[in-house]
Length: 114
Image (spheres, rainbow, N blue to C red):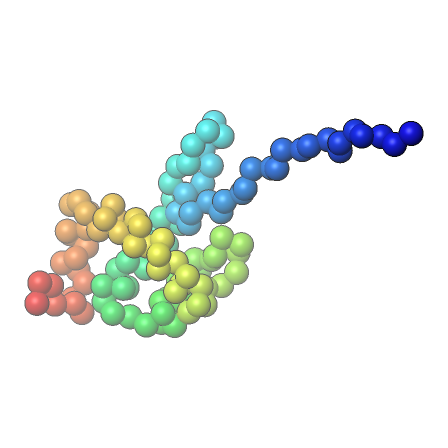
């Protein structure tokens, strides 16, 4: 006698997404919060971008300051380039407020509002 039983249907596991750079899972495991070191990295990159520094030079500057990628490796130009979309996402938050206004004045290599 043939069995007409269907194999058990299993629910597909939820698709996993990478946590955006600059964020981490909060201690309550229910939301994301800023990762201080990664946000510092993004701020530093934002400053270098407005100074029109090359991706290679940005990677070098991060490495000199001993900033590392999420997996602990030194930065490369390609790694910095891959962060560009994330930097665009967080730039409005990074580049606003009194702290940024003060920092802008210190960036002497850039002519603002020219």
